[in-house]
Image (cartoon, rainbow, N blue to C red; front, side, top):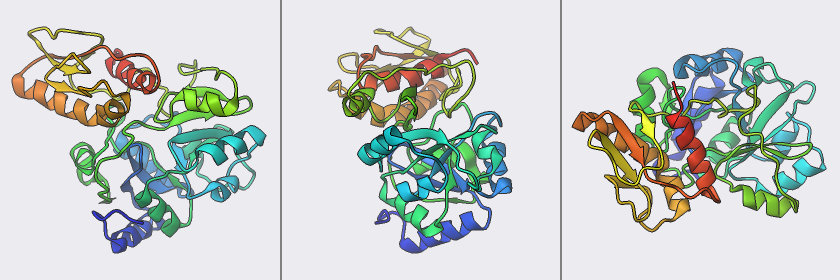
Length: 313
């Protein structure tokens, strides 16, 4: 069912916009995506232009169900088991392209694989079913900057360069999807599905390749998710020239979760980064200091985003 914030006729209009070559920002359970019909090369090229995204960085393709995914990509037994267990949801699988897939080469950055997922959010599902085709959708923000978890983040970051924004409120997961390469399963990006859940499903530890020598999947650039102010991590007390993003008992100017709840911290991360960055500008301060985050469960995905936000630009 579509969100109460977005009438069904808006979903129909958004689907028509996509089929006509337009760009539509829409909410998933993870973050807002900037969508284009994945078979339309001109529309996909607009994604890269609007975001300022390098063309070697591939895009995630969103489809309504596994049957739609199977028309584009090949599934081995392991991939089928993971899809059955975690789709719809915040898991992206990097799979070999099928012959006759029809995707624009820009979507895959010329690679023989495609990053694909089935989102769980009602509004994303309604849109994908109305489009009845694959939608390429990276996060709806300028490349390298903080991801959007609310419609207002999209409007602030991309303005009128997007043809339409579907407002579904705040994204409940708040972190981009976890990305796996299959054959054998290897973690390429930490995300909204904890690695422990995948390991439990597989019955063995999950090898990690989260900072490869070349970009195999979205979200692997060293510098990414960055606010305008520089970021320093693992700080229990902010310096006079910094605002402080807290966690748990470290209060800060804003706190990701006073209760030390990593799920809440993940859901709050990008919204709080937008807010703390604005606070730094308002106060004329030069840096964002971030409290320590435990490196376990969703904490690993949170730290992955924060480390990329803090990386040299």
